[in-house]
Length: 331
Image (cartoon, rainbow, N blue to C red; front, side):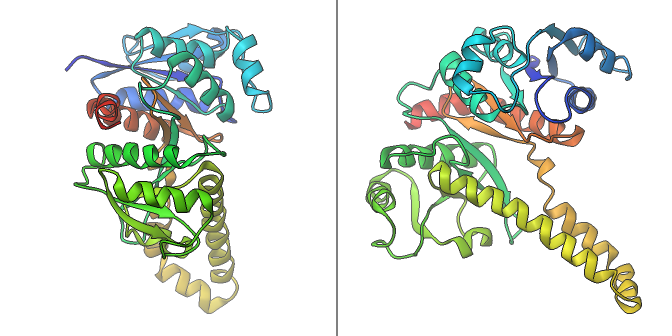
C-alpha cells in the first residue's frame, strides 16, 4: 500500500508546537506507511524537530507565517489569514497533496474552513463532528453531532445517523450498528419538535434505529451511535469530561484521607490505574468532521503527544476504510 500523507497543524492548540511535533515524531516511528507534513512557522517547528531522531523522509515542514487564535471569529480568520497553518493545511487536503488534516486549533474556524475549502460530500446537508466515547461495557459509542451544528433540522440528524452508522461499521467493525436518538424520554412521543420529527424520519431510514435513549443510559453501551444536535452533543461531551475528572479527584482525596484508606489505596492501585486508562481519551485522539469530501480531524485543544498519535491512528483507519466514498453511497 502507498504511503498515507497526513498534514498536521503544528501551531494549533495550547501545547503547540512542542507536543504536536513530539506526537508526529512518535507516530512516524510507529507506522511504516505514513508521511507527515507539519504546517507552521518553519523555524519554530524545525527547532522542535531537531530535538529528536527521526526519519527525515517521513516528516517535512511547510511554512505558514500566520496563526489563527482560539478567540478569533471563524469566518474572518479563514478569509483574512490565507497564510495560516490551518488554511494551508486544509488546502493540502483539497489539492490532494494530503489525505487528511489534523488541528487542535480553533474549532469554529476549522469547521468553517473545512466546509468552504474542502466542501461537503455531494448530498450531505451538513458535516458533523463525531467523537468516540467509552462505555460501561468496555466498548465505544459514537456521539454525533458533538459540536458542529448547534441549530439543526430533522433531516440533518437523519444524515448524522446514516454517516455514524457507516463510520462504526467500517472503522470500528460493528455489523449493523444500533442507532439511538438522545432524548428526554424513551417513549416515541417524548421530546421537542426536533426530536419528534427526527424520530419519525429515523423509523423510515435504512439503518438499525432502535429508538430514543435517555441521558442516564448513554454510557451503558446499548447503542453504537448516539444522535443529537451539536448543542446537546457538546453539553454531553463536556459534562462527561468534567464529571470523570471530578470523580477521579474525589476518589484520590478520599483514598488519602486516613491511614486505613491509604493502605486500601495501595492495595487497589492496579484497579485505579486500569480505571484511569479506561477513560483515557488519548486513545481516540480527536474527532473527525464526518460528511466532508476529505478528512479533517479536530484534536483536543490541550492535546499532548499521545493525543496526536491517537489522532493520526484514527486518520489511518478512516482512510483505509474508505469512509468518504462509503458515505457518498449511503447518502
